[in-house]
Image 1 (tube, rainbow, N blue to C red):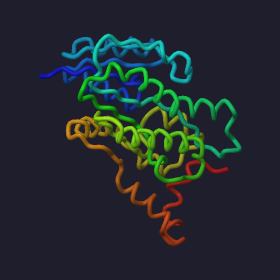
Image 2: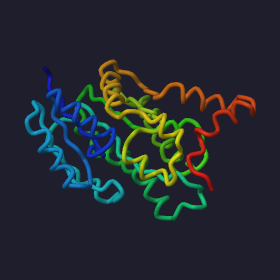
Image 3: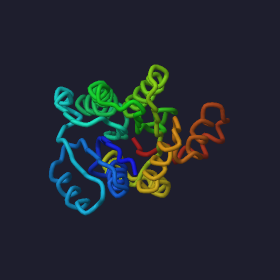
Image 4: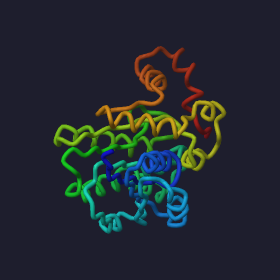
Length: 249
């Protein structure tokens, strides 16, 4: 097997952790960029007997000035830009620091990290950007989050036209992760029902990379439903509105 060197941001929980486990268990070398060293040590111990290797760097993606401290002494075959934060409330409810953090972590930080990693990318490297359905269709109570993800999504689409590297965007709905537990101030029963399984999504991403796909939308029915809002009559909008209202004012 051809071992790959994989760098993943936000790999200590949720989808990122599922990807870390999947690749290390398959024998690849995975380097995680995260801010919680205790979690990294726990993961390192968990995966110690696997064929692959796990290493990590402690970097807070919200601290833009610290991103250039990232060092990696190997060529990068796969770079997964996964770290993200969100707050699903009205724009009025967002604090100034909330706005800065969301834009820093979801948009500015991954772009800067990618800039620093460019010289380390192997000739046929893959860049994966974990974005969101919110990047493609506007939803209530996600103005800042959606804006940050839309900017990152469009950046990757433009970069794909400039480079020979394989670039794949992953636009997801809610996932069963700590991220969505923190981001949604009030739980919506419908949202809980439709949340994606991170392990299954990680496997789908792995297969997407192998097949050189340029985009994954999960779940696809959600993308179709959200797109229909732009052209559908008011009756259809009312029908799916409960899925979109993740928090009441």
